Image 1 (cartoon, rainbow, N blue to C red):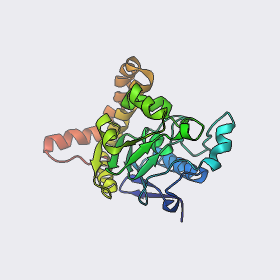
Image 2 (image 1 turned 90 degrees about the vertical axis):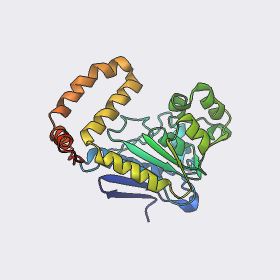
Image 3 (image 1 turned 180 degrees about the vertical axis):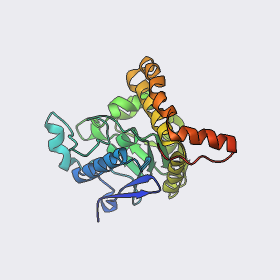
Image 4 (image 1 turned 45 degrees about the vertical axis):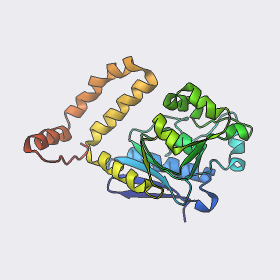
Length: 259
């Protein structure tokens, strides 16, 4: 059985870490399978949102360091192959489509760093997070040093990046790092509900909203303002806008097609 489950269901691409006997420790095979799934999501017009989850009691114990040591030592880092998108968004551009993320149990190092690139995050109340790298002789190199302080504040981020200590699901929720807390075992179902809400929204509108938000975050507010109406113009010419107007006038739910 594959160490990463990938299934398209109702416009959602399910991406499941599937190595529970190893607490879903991420080896390079898993990385490339996730990167391929991200590329499939991004390029398939029938897919509108991704849902990343994990089988077993724990999301991931982190990277399998002995498998990754050579990559970290080469001075160049992770190199996704053709037909892949780096799930850490270190190499190459980020996704055009949103990701919903569901964690449970231990979610260490690479699990946190992929979560930082997800757009909606659900956590089981037993989730535990950590960037353990400084306890292993290295430092986080999958984006935590770049993005964690943006999410939870500089000093909060350094408190955990510099010590390798764990933080709880409740702390993550209080900081805004995760958006919903649920009972253990309910994280996938709630993430699925949220993914389906995204699916029911207008795909071009969702992608435009995500793109504008990312431009504002990565390039600044002025860049986002300059691109807002030029990027909105082709969306306004879409069939989905006409459907949105009709559904408003007819007082019914819109049925969007992404065109």
